[in-house]
Amino acid sequence: MAKITIDRERCKGCLLCISFCPKGLISVDKGLNQRGAKPVKFSLQANLNEGGIPLKVGNETSECLGCAMCAIICPDCCIEVYK
Ligand code: SF4
Ligand code: SF4
Image (cartoon, rainbow, N blue to C red; front, side, top):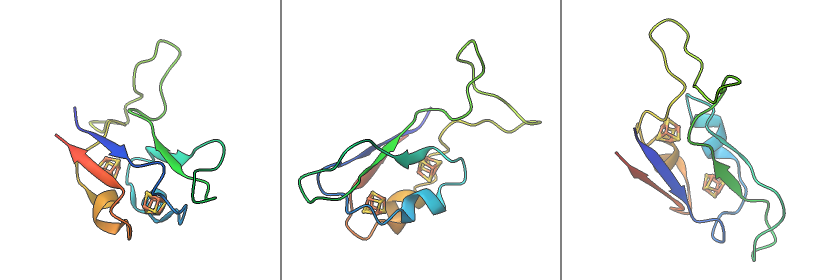
């Protein structure tokens, strides 16, 4: 399963990565960082059921694809993708 890391302190809260993630795995985090911005956070899986299992629609999964769209679009290079 792929995952990403986000450098919370460098994030400027532009929210571009949220718009571009096809799985909706990035969301706004609590609080402010040292830049005074509201940073984003990564959730390993979106839309878990009550047992913590990712919901599936057909053959689709809500897990990170490792597509790197978030990392490519981030203007401040805050995101790294691990496959
Ligand atoms: S690598 Fe792709 S699926 Fe994973 S968080 Fe980034 S945009 Fe979303
Ligand atoms: S695109 Fe980069 S700077 Fe913008 S919110 Fe996402 S991680 Fe932060």
